[in-house]
Length: 66
Image (cartoon, rainbow, N blue to C red; front, side, top):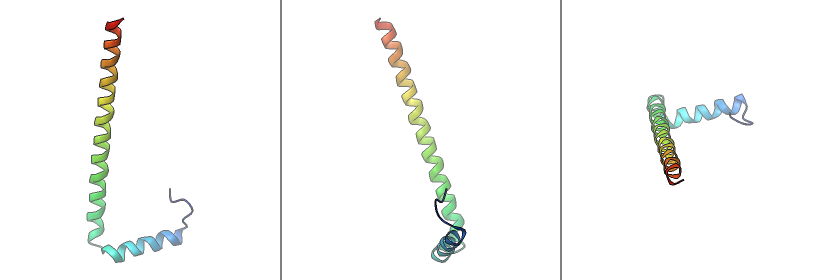
C-alpha cells in the first residue's frame, strides 16, 4: 500500500500530520474523508446502474428492430 516507505517514514509522516492539524482535528478530517469516499462510491454506483439501464434498453431496441 505504501510502496517503499518504511516504518520510520510512516511514523514521521504521522507526526507531521499530528503537528500540522492537531489531535482534535484529525477525527474531523477522517470523518470528512470517509463521507467523501462514501459519496464517491454512491455516485459511481449510480453511474454504473445508469450505464446498465442504457445497455439493456439498447439491446431491447436492437431486438425489436430485427
